[in-house]
Image (cartoon, rainbow, N blue to C red; front, side, top):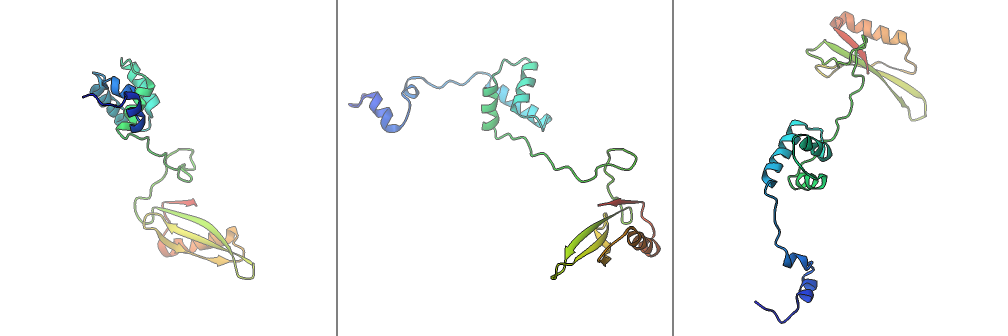
Amino acid sequence: MMMPVSERRLCRVLGQHRSTQRKAPRGADDEAALTEDIIALARQYGRYGYRRVTALLRDAGWHVNRKRVERIWRREGLKVPQRQPKRGRLWLNDGSCIRLRPEYPGHVWSYDFVEGRTHDGRKYRILSIIDEASRECLALPVARKLKSDDVLAALAELFVTRGPPAHIRPG
């Protein structure tokens, strides 16, 4: 149907490029297969982004552009998950890199110091000793100055009342 208005003016009013009216969009023949492969690689290698997935696709024999993979990546809503924060002290004293997970109450205890100030500005310290499996606070001695003897005395008292744990770790 012919309009009394030119194509140029009509496209300007609609806010479209004139090329959208002249060229029919054509999708690639292999778009579905490529999308399946991208999703499979993203599922298999969870921490890989679209750039590394592009390299894997090229190694697999695909002749594919990085920008095309990125476009499909976004269209499918794929994202690289956020990196998990490193947990504190992920090692044992023997140099291994295995974090000791508590398996039962009394397996792993941890202790740490907390420092605060009173309303008049004087410092005080709290030693917290926690059973990591049950998340129970075993002791909270408070003093102006906590020394190593105080820590040993608090732990010795807990050993007498509860028995020694399998492992103790500083917090």
